[in-house]
Length: 424
Image 1 (spheres, one colour):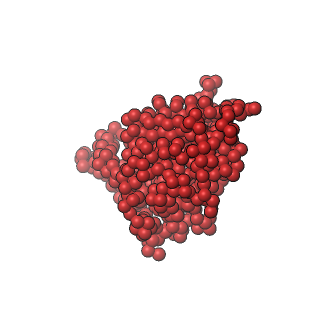
Image 2: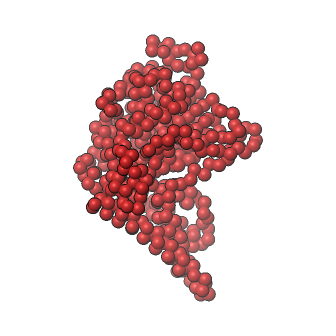
Image 3: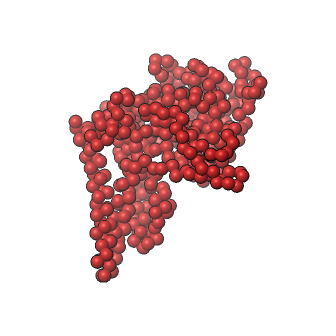
């Protein structure tokens, strides 16, 4: 019960701060007080406005906000977001542009399960919709998943990805962003062993910790410094009675958010101070740059405890993917089984979360893949976020990824190393 009490206490603190913000905003905006102009009241109202919104959005799943798209015909087409595969811990969804002919490119975006919702990749989705049929993994908040659904660890995650790949078929192209890159590589290799005809054409790994030991970062240092017992004791809590997943052991999103914020505490602190001043001067708006960013950044989800712990232990501490020793349900997955799927890695030169060198390690693991099917790119000056959602992605990386997809869309390699047309 102590874990449940801790979870409820943390949620109580969040709720209290939201209430304090709402109270300050309401009291400082009381019409009668406007008779005596007072800058302190303006500042208090601004502080309340920013504080209320900040703590309120921590428990709200953001909307995709993708409703229309202007096609080549010059007309606006509605976008239907359809669930094509539904599972307990996550769905596969499709952004269907109504009235548009099906695009030849079929892209599966594998979103991270690392504390944020899949909507973190909203701008990535928007940038790909003009040129492809876009699908994405939409992971669920563990606090909303009943205990009866069972557990979910890195092996289950890998099997989910395999099911999604099989559903889309061999004409698909997979792009994994950050945390899921190692497990997506493993899922592709396992699929190559079990159902080679269901493999995707290409696999692009963006900023993923394939080999965390290749280049140390604050993330890898933390993983090496703490023991699994310490993590389980300090990070894992039991969902409280107010949620559907009552009793489920989770790594709370609020704890993950605290970790994110602490890495750049000074920058985040200044951002909120500046926003309070803008609100007090009437210069802020509901969809200004600050709110657009933090509406997404502060919206966090809980992770299943077994997924979080197995990720730290098996991917970061034991480096099972990097050592080609990853096991799924008793079966050792051999990354060398990938012989037909073209693999590309993308890294940011200034990535302080997954440093350059960690992701490109995937190419060395693909021992059965010829050099002609391997590619890599390091984006100069780009940080972690920029390589999949920022200016670097839009202007430089996205065109390279689409070029890589097209170059490997029509040909496949046979087991003897020869290249034959896919339609042969």
